[in-house]
Amino acid sequence: MLRFDSTTARATWRQLRALRARPPALGGLAERSETFSAALEQCEQLFEAAASVGYEARPLPLFYALSQGGRAVAAAIALDDWVLRGHGIGAARLDGATWDIELKNQKQGAFRRIADILASPSLPTEVRLGDLCASLPDVVDSMPVSAGGAPALRIVRERYQLAETFGGPVVDSTSTSVAGAMVYGLRREYSVLSVSEQRAALSADLANYPTMVGFEIPGADDRPVTIGFDETGAKGVRLMWQADGTFDYHRRERILRMCQVRPNGESWVAPALAGNDRPLHPLVTWWAVLFATSMLARYEPASWLRALRIDQNDDAVALEAALDEAMVAVPQLLHQALQPV
Image 1 (cartoon, rainbow, N blue to C red):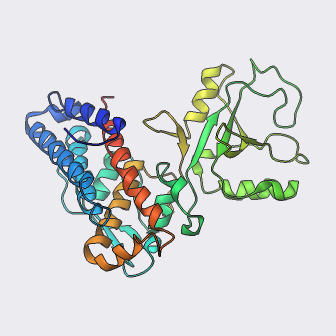
Image 2 (cartoon, one colour; image 1 turned 180 degrees about the horizontal axis):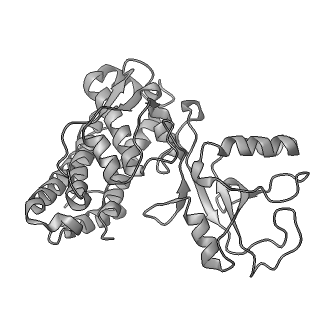
Image 3 (cartoon, rainbow, N blue to C red; image 1 turned 90 degrees about the horizontal axis):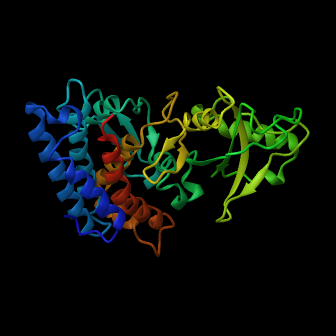
């Protein structure tokens, strides 16, 4: 059993280990069950190895742990072509700034195949490591703004609607078909802009998030954007969408339709990358992130160690945080992917 300090990580690994006696979905087929169990065993041991080494070497076992976990996912849920071969992804600009490493599909291989299996886009064009990390809910709060990239946004659904919606007449909150939510994580300071600038800037910023299409900014055009704070002091903006009905479950479903629901129950929206019309599956994003850091650690070890010097590099703590978060988030996402439908 993994010797992690995190209670969450230990619980996740117990759940993953329990799957090996009764593999989910197609993983129980005679020709797949041995691969499913062996890949999860290797995945677990490689995560344990990653937990026992410092950040200087951690990307190497972490990437291969995810790679083996991906093989278990493929054995369980791929209808065909479930044996993964080759990396399927390439990294360029390893000799430049860490956040500027570029990731892109190769013609075939595990990365492209796992994206297909998870019904996710992949990376048909080059994407920076900084953009990939910023799009991960697990990492975005640790990322310096200078790293670039549209950030993952936390979405908190409003259970009850305000009396006035879309600047129109007063409506009964129990019968309205409007779904409202607070959106946290946008980096622009809207309060310093004029009303017209606020609305234009917010629309431009949200253009990076295709699943949020159809949003409305509450209030008349001459009213400022509604800004609120959560219990931690995080600042958010209020948005609305038309739901498919007047009941609360209609409003809830409309918000969830655009979100990724994380294992902890939080709802997030990620930007689309590489010209795709929808976000990557978070497991696919982590695959690219861990591949990039493992390639840098393996082929440019001096550059990787320089990047980790916290007394010399502003990005070092963010890189450490990404590797820490991967230890918890990736096993959770693997378990989520392996849940029976």
